[in-house]
Image 1 (tube, each protein chain N blue to C red):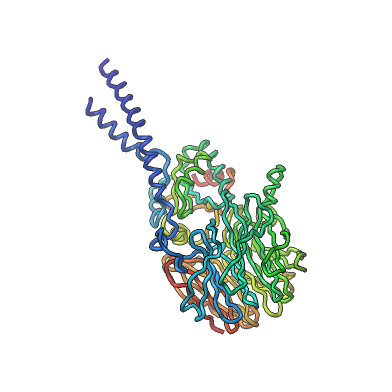
Image 2 (cartoon, one colour):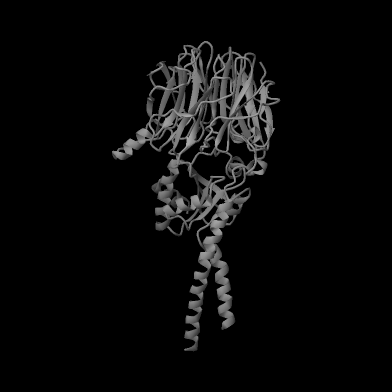
Length: 156
Length: 418
């Protein structure tokens, strides 16, 4: 029994080390890594601290993720060279701190964008509906909740 | 019974484990964040790196009437100026403009601006970042002794609340009057306070008629510009500038608009300059460029990403923006053709932009010898794998040059075919 308890504690230690809010570093290859692990339709949203309209979308996504917790949402900040704390503070404000989150890293935002979508010129926010690694819908600018729900219902 | 006790013990252990783990996790997260945030890789990021053009941000350059190339750029909390007398082969030691360090906001989309008048006075403008997000002041300094000394920076915007006054452009006429235009959120702030709706920012400008000693009160051009694309300005043949910016038409159509000044303190009619109908409630971070020819034709280039009409475009206007030629597409949309620039020299018009193939950025140019009617094939000038800024066009008395800043490499000044 003691062994079982100890094993469980160790397991918990390892799990909870990854369970809290954290922002992962998005580098070359990250996009493929993210999309290839998803079997279901999911929503991937690119945003930046430097983009006023992005906050409107984050606010909507905060509400949306409470209402539809089953829909997978991945947030990616394109802010190279900002503190992850700053990003986490914004996500926390919109109750998105437990949503899978990434931040661009390295020295070329352009290179990372090119891996994601060659027709994306960096305008933000930029939202993708992705199914089986394929970008089936893309929206530049603030995505409205009704539109997101419609997009999802069309492709579920 | 024994099983129940063990279960309780197990639950207790689980909570203790979580309690133990949580603070550790926060600590490690903080530690990680403290080391994050390196602006530039390699040598440029080291704390003891001296100010150098190779590590500079927001680089701009201009030729004076004697053919000296002047550069202005940001490094750390300072704006620096240096020059080259051999067309960019060697450079003078940089001179810091602001003695007191400040948060110089110099990104590729909002570089430092530099102009030199006929008498050799040097004028510099930049944006100083303030404590709040999206906020800034437009700063200005001049040298009247050929770059030996610079005046203490002054703030050009006369609204001094902490909000956005950013993305400035600057031009000078033959009389030496200096014009600076920028995007300004004072009206948005007022609208929020009185609970009224307001879209975007506003375009404001100010001018100096005492060679940059001071500026007249700010003048509003129009409300509801897009809020994060750099403005552009060109000097018309009558010595009054034309300002070009990305505007918000209707609810969210982010096309371009221009306004010509009718006097130093009088704005002409604001006219729509692009018709791509990009509906986007977002930030393109991708401003236009304008040049006015000797005979007063306006040449414009810009980016839009509407589903129907996207990529880079070029058009000209013979009548100060009342009508335009049909916009032509420029560059390879699938190769990220971006950040276009335009300049005129006599009847020749030059376009410059950059493209990206996934590994390398290329600098591309094309030219028209008949005022923008017919264009040469696009020609690649240079490639790089280095991080780079948006390219610029400039000219001396003889010819036009492309200039490009690439981090960690020499500043590139490339003479273009006449």
